[in-house]
Length: 264
Image (cartoon, rainbow, N blue to C red; front, side):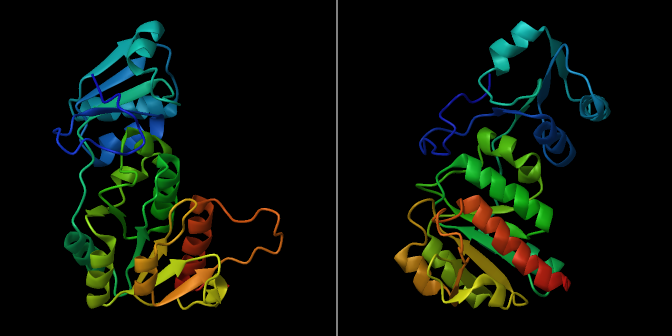
């Protein structure tokens, strides 16, 4: 039961996607509230406010819920790090296509705000960025279909429910997606160590796509050419060298949000 494959995000493209187990209280609660859940497993000793809410929602939606002795639960769910005594069997993550994401973001505001992730490989980073994007009200994410982390059970756990609320478009070619976004009126700002301007001097009021490069490699040369400008994050401390990609994304997301919301 569940998908016990390597959680790196790489998929066997020739196999039909299988249902998978997700773990973690917030991830399971969000899946019940915003997604589709086929079955819930609880460790017999699981207690607390969120567990009670999960049980109530599951009963209301007639989702089968099974309490298992601690050892039996661990046998079935123990491969999920940080499961917190609860897991849910869910269908594979359902991606949007790019035009759906553009249309949905345009329907919400005249100045939509999207993220494009340039071949991030670490599911921890993808999950953390999704969580920040959800908190900041980002309209959606764009990720590539190959050589990058996808929205797996591991990512959904780290995202703590954000994966069920944030739209994600999966595309086969980021360069072509960048062209389509510019045709739709978006401006592309890339994050780069030696960017054109420091991030706090940028104009974020436009229909915007923040482009975040991969761990270690940063922005690809081709995608950088599509960017209207690149943004740097000053490092006066110097010893750190650079921020983790999810931390850098959080800095830029909240700089943009602060300007858009008029925070002083």
